[in-house]
Image (cartoon, rainbow, N blue to C red; front, side, top):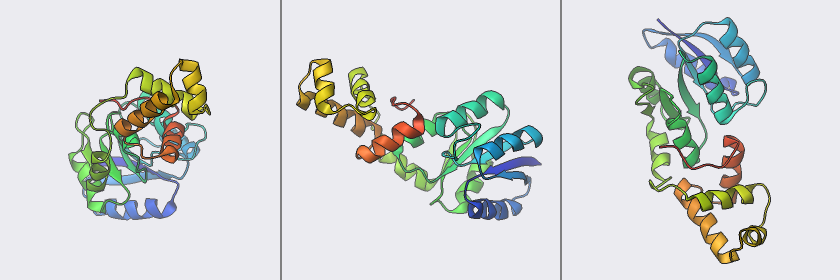
Length: 210
Protein backbone atom coordinates (compact mmCIF):
# COMPACT_ATOMS: atom_id res chain seq x y z
CA UNK A 1 0.00 0.00 0.00
CA UNK A 2 1.42 3.38 -1.06
CA UNK A 3 1.06 5.86 1.83
CA UNK A 4 0.30 9.44 0.77
CA UNK A 5 0.36 12.82 2.50
CA UNK A 6 -1.72 15.60 0.89
CA UNK A 7 -0.63 19.22 1.34
CA UNK A 8 -2.64 22.17 0.05
CA UNK A 9 -3.80 25.45 1.55
CA UNK A 10 -7.29 24.87 0.12
CA UNK A 11 -9.27 22.32 2.19
CA UNK A 12 -11.64 21.74 -0.76
CA UNK A 13 -8.71 20.55 -2.88
CA UNK A 14 -7.59 18.16 -0.16
CA UNK A 15 -11.15 16.82 0.17
CA UNK A 16 -11.53 16.26 -3.58
CA UNK A 17 -8.15 14.58 -4.00
CA UNK A 18 -8.68 12.41 -0.95
CA UNK A 19 -12.06 11.25 -2.26
CA UNK A 20 -10.53 10.37 -5.63
CA UNK A 21 -7.60 8.44 -4.13
CA UNK A 22 -10.00 6.34 -2.03
CA UNK A 23 -11.15 4.82 -5.33
CA UNK A 24 -7.61 3.82 -6.33
CA UNK A 25 -6.49 0.37 -5.14
CA UNK A 26 -3.04 0.32 -3.61
CA UNK A 27 -3.04 3.94 -2.38
CA UNK A 28 -4.08 5.42 0.97
CA UNK A 29 -4.00 8.97 2.35
CA UNK A 30 -2.40 8.82 5.80
CA UNK A 31 -2.27 12.55 6.61
CA UNK A 32 -3.08 16.03 5.31
CA UNK A 33 -1.62 19.51 5.80
CA UNK A 34 -2.88 23.02 4.97
CA UNK A 35 0.39 24.92 5.50
CA UNK A 36 4.12 24.37 5.19
CA UNK A 37 4.42 24.33 8.98
CA UNK A 38 1.79 21.59 9.30
CA UNK A 39 3.42 19.69 6.44
CA UNK A 40 6.73 19.72 8.32
CA UNK A 41 4.99 18.23 11.36
CA UNK A 42 3.19 15.53 9.37
CA UNK A 43 6.39 14.48 7.59
CA UNK A 44 8.08 14.07 10.96
CA UNK A 45 5.31 12.11 12.67
CA UNK A 46 3.68 10.22 9.78
CA UNK A 47 5.73 7.86 7.59
CA UNK A 48 4.77 8.11 3.92
CA UNK A 49 5.91 7.00 0.47
CA UNK A 50 4.57 9.90 -1.55
CA UNK A 51 3.67 13.54 -1.07
CA UNK A 52 1.13 15.42 -3.21
CA UNK A 53 1.66 19.13 -2.64
CA UNK A 54 0.87 22.57 -3.98
CA UNK A 55 4.03 24.35 -5.15
CA UNK A 56 3.37 27.70 -3.51
CA UNK A 57 2.27 26.69 -0.01
CA UNK A 58 2.12 29.52 2.55
CA UNK A 59 5.71 30.20 3.65
CA UNK A 60 6.50 29.23 7.23
CA UNK A 61 8.95 26.79 8.76
CA UNK A 62 9.81 25.08 5.50
CA UNK A 63 9.26 27.82 2.94
CA UNK A 64 7.54 27.90 -0.43
CA UNK A 65 8.28 27.28 -4.07
CA UNK A 66 11.68 25.87 -4.92
CA UNK A 67 12.72 26.26 -1.27
CA UNK A 68 9.99 23.80 -0.37
CA UNK A 69 10.91 21.27 -3.07
CA UNK A 70 14.65 21.48 -2.39
CA UNK A 71 14.22 20.98 1.34
CA UNK A 72 11.82 18.08 0.84
CA UNK A 73 14.26 16.34 -1.49
CA UNK A 74 17.13 16.91 0.92
CA UNK A 75 15.36 15.86 4.11
CA UNK A 76 13.10 13.12 2.67
CA UNK A 77 14.93 11.70 -0.38
CA UNK A 78 12.87 8.49 -0.38
CA UNK A 79 9.53 10.31 -0.54
CA UNK A 80 8.25 10.75 -4.09
CA UNK A 81 6.74 14.12 -4.97
CA UNK A 82 3.77 15.04 -7.14
CA UNK A 83 3.10 18.76 -7.55
CA UNK A 84 -0.56 19.73 -7.95
CA UNK A 85 -0.61 23.46 -8.58
CA UNK A 86 -2.45 26.52 -9.88
CA UNK A 87 0.81 28.09 -11.12
CA UNK A 88 0.45 28.97 -14.80
CA UNK A 89 3.86 30.50 -15.51
CA UNK A 90 5.68 28.22 -18.00
CA UNK A 91 9.13 29.03 -16.59
CA UNK A 92 8.06 27.92 -13.10
CA UNK A 93 6.50 24.71 -14.41
CA UNK A 94 9.74 23.96 -16.28
CA UNK A 95 11.66 24.34 -13.02
CA UNK A 96 9.27 21.98 -11.26
CA UNK A 97 9.36 19.42 -14.07
CA UNK A 98 13.16 19.25 -13.93
CA UNK A 99 13.40 19.17 -10.14
CA UNK A 100 13.06 15.40 -9.71
CA UNK A 101 9.32 15.16 -9.10
CA UNK A 102 7.27 12.10 -9.98
CA UNK A 103 4.48 14.14 -11.53
CA UNK A 104 3.26 17.64 -12.36
CA UNK A 105 -0.49 18.24 -12.57
CA UNK A 106 -2.31 21.55 -12.94
CA UNK A 107 -5.46 22.10 -10.89
CA UNK A 108 -7.41 22.72 -14.10
CA UNK A 109 -6.60 19.14 -15.16
CA UNK A 110 -9.23 16.46 -14.74
CA UNK A 111 -8.66 14.33 -11.65
CA UNK A 112 -7.80 11.35 -13.83
CA UNK A 113 -4.53 13.14 -14.70
CA UNK A 114 -3.52 12.95 -11.05
CA UNK A 115 -4.34 9.25 -11.10
CA UNK A 116 -2.07 8.78 -14.11
CA UNK A 117 0.70 10.68 -12.36
CA UNK A 118 0.39 8.30 -9.40
CA UNK A 119 0.50 5.22 -11.61
CA UNK A 120 2.83 6.26 -14.44
CA UNK A 121 5.19 8.92 -13.14
CA UNK A 122 8.75 8.40 -12.00
CA UNK A 123 11.53 10.68 -10.79
CA UNK A 124 13.42 10.15 -14.03
CA UNK A 125 10.38 10.61 -16.28
CA UNK A 126 7.67 12.62 -14.49
CA UNK A 127 4.09 12.42 -15.68
CA UNK A 128 2.85 15.79 -16.95
CA UNK A 129 -0.90 16.46 -16.89
CA UNK A 130 -2.58 17.64 -20.08
CA UNK A 131 -3.26 21.20 -18.91
CA UNK A 132 0.23 21.53 -17.46
CA UNK A 133 1.65 20.31 -20.75
CA UNK A 134 -0.27 22.95 -22.70
CA UNK A 135 1.10 25.66 -20.42
CA UNK A 136 4.62 24.32 -20.81
CA UNK A 137 4.32 24.42 -24.60
CA UNK A 138 3.64 28.16 -24.40
CA UNK A 139 6.86 28.71 -22.53
CA UNK A 140 10.60 28.45 -23.13
CA UNK A 141 11.43 27.71 -26.75
CA UNK A 142 14.50 25.67 -25.91
CA UNK A 143 16.85 28.64 -25.97
CA UNK A 144 18.18 29.76 -22.61
CA UNK A 145 18.71 33.42 -21.73
CA UNK A 146 22.29 34.60 -22.10
CA UNK A 147 24.38 35.52 -19.06
CA UNK A 148 23.88 39.22 -19.77
CA UNK A 149 20.11 38.79 -20.25
CA UNK A 150 19.85 37.08 -16.86
CA UNK A 151 21.98 39.84 -15.33
CA UNK A 152 19.59 42.46 -16.69
CA UNK A 153 16.56 40.61 -15.27
CA UNK A 154 18.19 40.27 -11.85
CA UNK A 155 18.88 43.99 -11.75
CA UNK A 156 15.37 44.83 -12.96
CA UNK A 157 13.44 42.69 -10.47
CA UNK A 158 15.21 44.25 -7.48
CA UNK A 159 13.99 47.69 -8.53
CA UNK A 160 16.44 49.14 -11.01
CA UNK A 161 14.94 50.99 -13.99
CA UNK A 162 16.07 50.25 -17.53
CA UNK A 163 17.90 53.59 -17.49
CA UNK A 164 19.73 52.72 -14.29
CA UNK A 165 20.67 49.30 -15.66
CA UNK A 166 21.86 50.83 -18.93
CA UNK A 167 24.05 53.33 -17.08
CA UNK A 168 25.53 50.62 -14.87
CA UNK A 169 26.30 48.31 -17.80
CA UNK A 170 27.35 51.14 -20.10
CA UNK A 171 24.68 50.15 -22.64
CA UNK A 172 21.85 52.01 -24.31
CA UNK A 173 18.36 51.84 -22.82
CA UNK A 174 17.18 50.25 -26.06
CA UNK A 175 19.77 47.47 -25.82
CA UNK A 176 18.91 46.74 -22.21
CA UNK A 177 15.20 46.73 -23.02
CA UNK A 178 15.75 44.24 -25.85
CA UNK A 179 17.81 41.99 -23.57
CA UNK A 180 15.09 42.04 -20.92
CA UNK A 181 12.38 41.25 -23.49
CA UNK A 182 14.47 38.45 -25.03
CA UNK A 183 15.10 36.81 -21.66
CA UNK A 184 11.44 36.99 -20.69
CA UNK A 185 10.37 35.51 -24.03
CA UNK A 186 12.79 32.58 -23.66
CA UNK A 187 11.52 31.94 -20.14
CA UNK A 188 7.85 32.12 -21.12
CA UNK A 189 7.13 35.26 -19.08
CA UNK A 190 4.55 37.47 -20.76
CA UNK A 191 4.77 40.67 -18.70
CA UNK A 192 6.36 42.35 -15.68
CA UNK A 193 3.68 40.96 -13.37
CA UNK A 194 4.65 37.39 -14.29
CA UNK A 195 8.33 38.32 -14.01
CA UNK A 196 7.73 39.57 -10.47
CA UNK A 197 5.75 36.46 -9.56
CA UNK A 198 8.47 34.26 -11.02
CA UNK A 199 11.23 36.03 -9.12
CA UNK A 200 9.29 35.79 -5.83
CA UNK A 201 8.34 32.16 -6.37
CA UNK A 202 11.81 30.98 -7.34
CA UNK A 203 13.67 33.21 -4.91
CA UNK A 204 15.97 34.29 -7.74
CA UNK A 205 15.96 34.79 -11.49
CA UNK A 206 17.64 31.99 -13.36
CA UNK A 207 17.14 30.24 -16.70
CA UNK A 208 15.00 27.09 -16.64
CA UNK A 209 16.92 23.88 -16.03
CA UNK A 210 17.06 21.35 -18.84
